[in-house]
Image (tube, rainbow over all chains, first blue to last red; front, side, top):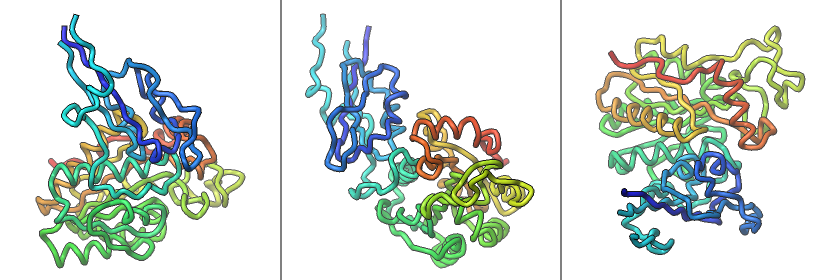
Amino acid sequence: MATVKGEIVVNTERCKGCELCVPVCKEKTIAMSVNLNSKGYHFASSINADCNGCTNCALICPDGAITVYRVKIN
Amino acid sequence: MSHIPTKDEICEPENMVYSRTCLLTDNALSYCPGCGHGTAHRLIMEVIEEMNLQADTIGVAPVGCSVLAYDFMNIDMQQAAHGRAPAVATGIKRLYPDKFVFTYQGDGDLAAIGTGETIHVCNRGENITVFFVNNGIYGMTGGQMAPTTLPNMKTATSPFGRDTETMGYPLKITELIANLPGTYFVSRQSVHTPANVRKAKKAIEKAISYQKLNKGLCFVEIVSNCNSGWKMTPLESNKWMEENMFPYYPLGDIKVPK
């Protein structure tokens, strides 16, 4: 069975830590980092490998900080 | 068992399914964290990119938080006086009827100081598109009461809540202009969940493509949060918006072409 595997890349300097992406991720892949970016925001980051590339987080992100990748595995 | 790709193998350009549109400039959005303006900007620019309209688009940004749009939208922009964006857009569209002209306005601009311009541009049926971001408050100036503020909603200038006896009722300007024969497509959307973002993008696509038909004005309202003005976190403000704003400002298409 073909499955999909995704990955997100967060532009940490663009992220403002609004946390809107956290509840929309059904795979619970996103959490706020304990680290800060140069503006002092806790930025979003990927914490596990469960991402399926659904793009929900990128759609909701007001700052366009998230890029989503997806591959099919046969 | 098949090979499971590593993170580096997945993050190749050919596997990219979503990235920020190049029609937004590299400037960091100066809106507050979680503000719906950023999403609204992105959706409009994505649609313009997909329709390949960058060279033919002229945007008009008036006063309010929406004035910052010209820093972020990588298209030709014109600044207008407070509330006067539809009048400026009328002039631009009449001089350049082949261009795609839109205004991007907030509720303090479109529904307060610019009410006259808004109603008359709709009544004249100018072939422009109006994007209206409604957050029920004056965001940029510090959260004062706007005509769209809900009854009993506390703001900087209505600290005990909006009393409808003395301050009147929230203005449903979108329903108002939908009754005018000059409007062709009127819709109300929001951008607080991924599903709503997809719906809003479809409405924006329609509003942009209908302008080519020269059948009248297209109007898309985006009900948005103002977490700084409402004194809430972004997540709380979206929940509050669902519970309080949507019963008064129901989402959906209000006027669709027959």
